[in-house]
Each structure stands twice: as structure tokens, then as C-alpha cells.
Length: 470
Image 1 (cartoon, rainbow, N blue to C red):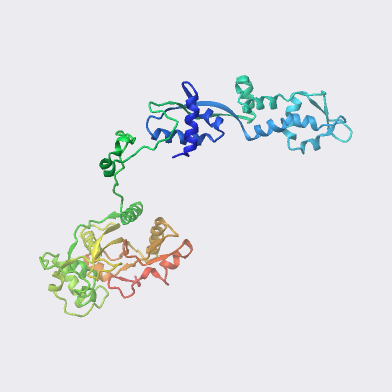
Image 2 (cartoon, rainbow, N blue to C red):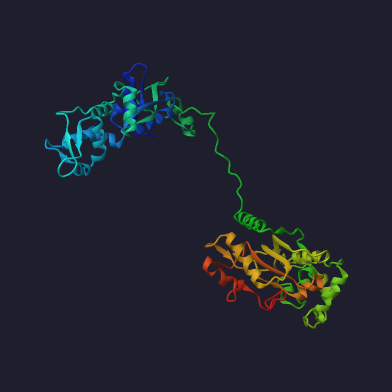
């Protein structure tokens, strides 16, 4: 609320007038800024029917900064005229004056001065009249006194063109007495308390009326989760790069597609119950492409396709075990096998979805997280292609940001050829996580180092899925 003294001063002024009073006049009478009067009006309105105020708009002329200077010191042309002695003044000296350039031009137009270009010693300026009347200053002083109505529109517009005047819109209030007008400020009660009821004091108090048309407090609404925003950003980048999204709605997967098809041995530690959630019902999967399953069994146990294999007794019982998928690469394996069953065409796939790991829950680990995966299949792909795609991918993501640098590489031939993909087809891939990143900050100058031989995007050299010699 505005200062009580200001409120009462406004009310006393209003008491003395018939009808009403403009808030601009109130500000002038009390010698305060108009915005303080606006605040006082709003405070009085909040007290009930003490006053009535109607907002109105009006236009008025005001002096600019240059206009105020001229009203005090005279116009540029007058200052130039007054600076010229009877014997004249060299033009180059006159032009050095603060008002020289503008004042010379205006004084010449008014025929107050003349220029003698043939004068000995160079061009010289002389007065042509004895005295002048500084009408520009006089007009500006009228406006300064609030008497702009005495000027014709043409005169005001000329001063406006010289940027000495400006027309401004002024918003003010027309203030009149309300039905409960009083020059004394009485704070209205906003709450009826049990004590008021018990003592009966409520009868003597004035309560602020309810505003039944007031808008209620806006209800809190939902917001996108930060991870969903990041996921949308990743998805948009993949789509801009021409990738197709893989179907990833099968959270339950067989060990065959999750591990065996990716050339991961059945005795690998990742297949232990301490790392993987195995399903009890149904515990086993039974439908597999038999010819492909036999080729996977052979490359694991005996080798083939240029690989010596793992030389162990591969068991169908291990491959049948159902589990919650530990990575979306199981989906990539299914898509690549499907691709191999038709006439080969180059593809670019991506997926962003949940995977599950049997880990101890703590402040930074959950039993599930989202994996981001990109896969490209084409003839003759090399590690250089992978580096180029990763450079483009992370550039679109935004350099000089904190981002995860994840696993990447080239799929091994002993994984791809049993699927039936043609000789010469290579598959490059990389993966990230939304929730559990290993973060590093990088810039454009060291992106080559990140995807090169030193860091190589956490390349797993002994990975059963990827290898460098491709």
C-alpha cells in the first residue's frame, strides 16, 4: 500500500473540488512523481468505495533533451549569431563550435549571416542584421510552461522535425469521490476471526468486500521431464540424419537374441544372474530360425567365417532362457537378421528405449535405464565412416556441452555372416545412455581425438561384438 500520508493528502485535495480531479494535476499540486499518485489510486481502490477512478489517455508535447538545452541556452542559430564579432569570424573556426554546423545552416536560412568566400585569409562569416529574435527558444519555453496550445500545429511539427519536441501519450486517472468517501484511511478487515465473533467486535469493523469475479490461482500443470526433452533432441538428430527408428516394444527377450546372436559366449560374466534379470514364467523361448541358430552354434563352438570361435560345448538350453533385455542391441540383431533375409539395401537404424540390469540400487543407479543406439549397414564401411558419422552426430547435439561418450565400433564378421548378410557388408554402431552417462566436456578441436585412436569413444578392443581390424 502507498504511504498513508500521501493517500490522505490525495483525499483532502479531492474533498475540495466539485466533480473530480486528474491524477496528473494531483501529482503537480503535491509535487510528487505521477507514478506515486497511480500507486495511491490503486491502494484507495483496494479499500472499497472510497474513490472511483477511470483511466484515460491523452497526448501532450514534451521537450527532448536537446529541446531542454535550447530552452535554457538558446537555439543553435542564435548561439552562432551571438558568437560572431563585428569584424566577422573565419568559417573554419565557427564550424569548430558545438553549435557550429547546425547553427550556421539555420542562421544562413534566416539570413542573419552571410559567407564571404573571397575574403583574404579564407572564407569568413559576417552578421547581416544588428539583432535577432530567438523564436525557437521562445516556443520551446512556452511548451516547457505547459502552454503548447498557444503554438500552431505547423510550429510544433517543425520543432518535432528538428527533434526538439516529442508527442507522448500520457495515461492518467480521473478521480471522483466514492460512495464511502472519507478523508481518513481506515484499514478494512479481510478475515472474520473467531475472536471477532466471540467479542462482537465484528459489528464495528469494516470488511473488504469479496471480489467474486477475481481469477483464481492458476493450477499447476505438468511439465516435460528433462530426460524426455533430451530423448526428443536425440530422436530429432537421428531423423535429421536419415535414420529409421527400430521397433523396441519387446522388453522380454531370449538369451539367443540378447547374447548368442551377438557372438557373446555362454560363459560370459554378463550372463550371470548377478547382472541379468531372468524370467521364471515363461522361463524358456522355443521359436527360433533353426538354420540361423545352427550357424550361430557352429561359430561359437567350432568357429567359421574367419573366426576360430570359442571352442566350447554350446547349449540350446542357455540360448532359450528368457530375460529382461540388457541392451537394445538385441533389437539391432533382429533387424539385421531380417535385413539379411531379403535383397540387401543399405540401412540406417536407431532406437531409444529401456533396458534392464540386475544392479544394486543407490543414489546413481537404477535397475533400468534408457539406451540410445545407432546402427548403419552398407558395403565397405570402415572405422573412418564411423568417425565421420559420430562427428556429425555430436556436432548436431551441440559442441561445448556435457555429453556422454559411449561405446562404438564395427560389428564382427562372425556375427554378421551367419545372419546371411552378403560378403563385403559392414555394420558400424554406437550407443549412449540418457541416465547414466560417463561425461566429458569437449570442443570442435579435439573431436578427432575423441573418435580417434587415443580415446576411440571407449572402444572395447576385446568386445565379442565389435573389433578394430575391420
